Length: 316
Image (cartoon, rainbow, N blue to C red; front, side):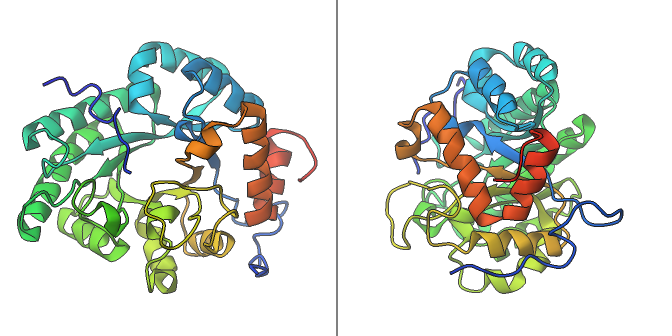
């Protein structure tokens, strides 16, 4: 079975707290620097690969999250040269996994696809490969967990050789039987505890985790386990469509969540990752402007630092 495009058909799917001490200014030595911002290619799904890289860079982003089907179509070697010439790093490569067979291929095929993803990541210099566990797919939970643990352990050995981090992404309960039976941060951390591999962490997606009943109480505990944070928002609590919105446009306390991650010691990248048909319909300039406005709303100090460092503009 050709696994090159296994993930190409995915159709799954007042906040006015003060900025914590030391996070509002970045001029004094020893202060925590704001973790680097990245923008996912999926946020501008319809933009061709080369155009996306060049536009991301011209808009001030120095890091991009890549989508495997687009990368494969463009070519990994060509992409590596383009990214290097543009001075762009790669925050993440999405997605691999599906260890339970819910995506129409066997466990061994999922492993081989994961190896392919790691090879792609190494070529373009991606820091992290994002994994999705797979839906329950008729398995008992114990068996599904064993498949995921064994699969990630196998991939982690190759990832360590290549210098790539793995990040396991929990998803909302809506996708329990289709994309991931791991639906909470605690469940996913339980898998990490079984795996016991230092190069495997969490990929936290605010859309998928933001409504967990008590996760906000333990954000600082979650932060050290986290390799990557997908920043987005949830339009409404009972939405049945897989439609995200830009941070600050929905119901989640995005600013407070990001602050808690930084206070908790998270040092990875915050990647603006928004799956939205509505956004994809916008002209690229309007979409980029909306992203900038969104960042300015959810964390003005972060936006100001980013703007000064990468654009030499005044804070928005």
